[in-house]
Length: 100
Image (cartoon, rainbow, N blue to C red; front, side, top):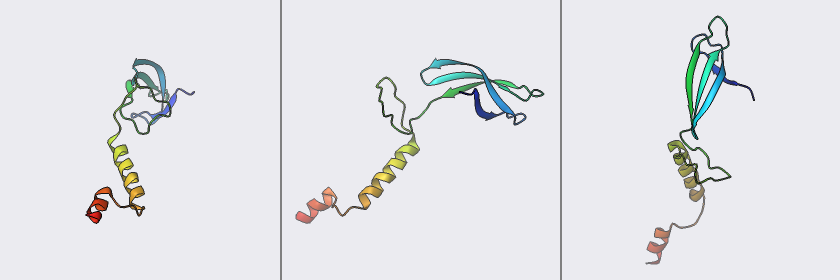
């Protein structure tokens, strides 16, 4: 695995390399980066944090829990709505009103 995360140096646009990193929490890694363009050589500390779940894991672990990303919830609702809109099945309340 390469230590390049394809990050560009904000100072010179050169490639940044991870010089060291430490795991502070299950969802947080602190990294120390350095620009590989020698005349620049800018060094910085960066935090890599997992904040939201975008897709469920195929191997669930109850000890690992992140909030679902709001846009993922909206996207799922849109998919669910599209699936039900393409059926001829009556809604439960519509079916009850029709039989009354």
